[in-house]
Structures are given as C-alpha cells and as structure tokens.
Length: 189
Image 1: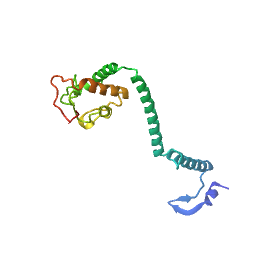
Image 2 (image 1 turned 180 degrees about the horizontal axis):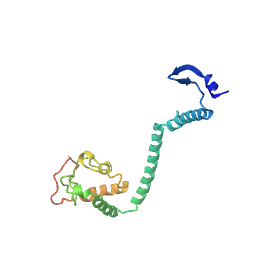
Image 3 (image 1 turned 120 degrees about the vertical axis):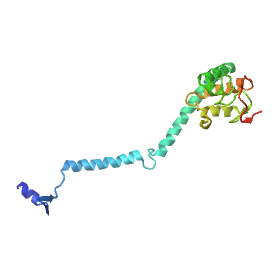
Image 4 (image 1 turned 90 degrees about the vertical axis):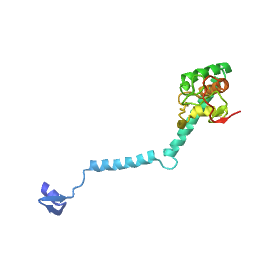
C-alpha cells in the first residue's frame, strides 16, 4: 500500500488550495504520555489540595503549625523560667538595666526613663497602657506602632522582657530624674 493510498482512506474530502484534511491517529507513545499526565495531575490535586481528612488543606496545615508553635513556645517558656529563677532579684534588676540600655529604650525614654519628644516618662505613676507588671510586659512584647513603640518579642526572650519590665517598675518608677517629661495617661496609685 502506497503512502498516498494510506492517507486516502482517512481523507474527509475537505480540500482547500490543494491542502487536504486528514484524520490520522496520534502515535501510541503520545497517547500514553497524555493519559499518564492526566492521571498524575489528578493525583497531585487530590494529594496537595486535599480531600476531607487528609490534613493537607490550608486549615489543617495552619492548625498544625499553630500547635507546633505553641509547643515550641511552651518549651522556651519552661526553659526561660528555670533560668530566671536562678537569678536573684538584684541580678535581674542589673540585667534589666543592661537590656534597657542595649536594646535602645534610652533613645525614646531617656537615659534615666525621664521621657523625651518620642517616648513617655517612665519614672512617674501615670501610665498610658495599664498599671500592672503584666501591662508593662505586654506593651514591651507587642509594642504600639501607632505611638511609635517597637515590638521587642523578636529581639528579646520572655525572661528578658520581664527583667526590663521589673527594672522599669522597680528602679525607674519614683526615681524623679531631672528634666522629666510631664505625666501622661492614667494615675496608677
């Protein structure tokens, strides 16, 4: 059978300017590759985008990452609380004072906590964000971007933040430095 006769069988009688439309079957290897590709795509979609209960959907991955982060945080807190208990109160105050200077708190709150154009006075009994030790720890940890207070949770451990808060409340409050900024906030007596 000649080439012309082979293609003649599949001719659809569509011809334009001497170009004929033929209906030839694709080679077997292309058909197999196409089927394998479709099968792989379906498995990929099911595996990576999830089916109910496989744990691969976004909500399940988020929940598992939150659980993992909470575990890591609990371990860090446990380790840091065991370290903190080994330091005396005086050592914690010295460490808090060192951190206050090293972490740049003096840039906004002054060398002695007196406050300046940026940060409030930390030596009086009026506070902008709560009066308790926990409130001070929270504002150091989370910051307050609208007021220019930077979050220190990424640059200090929980123990270090607690030491700085203890230093502020134990040594700075009531120290009455020269040129202290005027009181701001709520009186915490």
